[in-house]
Image (cartoon, rainbow, N blue to C red; front, side, top):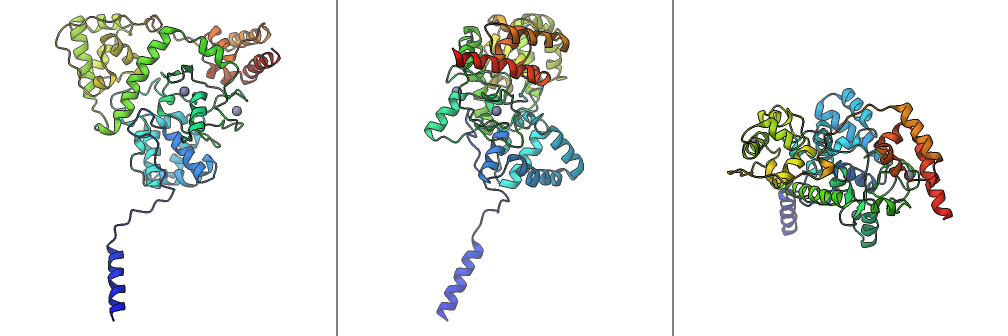
Length: 399
Ligand SMILES: [Zn+2]
Ligand SMILES: [Zn+2]
């Protein structure tokens, strides 16, 4: 009888236990939420696939696409938009748009990790424009990978690396890399075989420092380094603060902050303010009226010149109750961007000429010389770009 009662009590206790809800996928803790080193959502997905010992593409096809269709109740449309952006546009999954929202929601539902939206920029989707915000392809610091590997730190891809404005690793004073050191190809933020620290095309270790890196890091000028320090510090504050802020941060903060700045600097004259910061004439007025959201690169000019921390500006804590004088923009920021069409015949002839030149140059240097983004050049002329890189590498090996 006593044994029966004891067993019954035990059963009662078991039924009263509050067990956490079961998750479909491993409840992998995200890396670094609440710090400047927070990983990106694409990094999290690739780590999750590695832990399940399947390619990233398999994890997405078997688990993520079906859950996304449940969230939006339209499997065909979701599946089409998901797989059409896969590989080519997966950088947007770390951004502040619908793909970042759907993917973080879907992954949270599968892993029962509630805060995966902090691996994206969704906190800022009411106060920042998506234009020019996240890069479509990976950027990484080989020295960071080497260091994490040596210290046993989990290999991950910081969200900071996915932001277009970040071009150097301040910790190692090196330029971020954009091409695999072995196959010389740019790597989409997420594709079938993605895994942090490795090339998703040829599986090479990305902690390998390419021969061109020393040259590239030497080419980093002081002005760019100073600008990057300012950019890094402000973005690091933003990423670290995200979990402690209302989400999303209210849109009215922009109109209010810009209005204060225009009043303090040019007495309310938006066009004069635009001239001082090298903006198009209508830009500050549009921000002030709430008709447009600021691009991050343009907003950094304002924060730099008025010495306002970006976090304070975006969270509506700007106080400017008397006229202020502007700090001059660094020269590389003080020219208006010139947009030009991609002249493929001209670019092809310039690349062919670069392939014949002695001594050979790195692909990055060639891209700088002809004034185009290396990713664009590789996209349109992969064979020529690969040949230029390989010629440089061969010459280095012989030297
Ligand atoms: Zn580094
Ligand atoms: Zn590769």
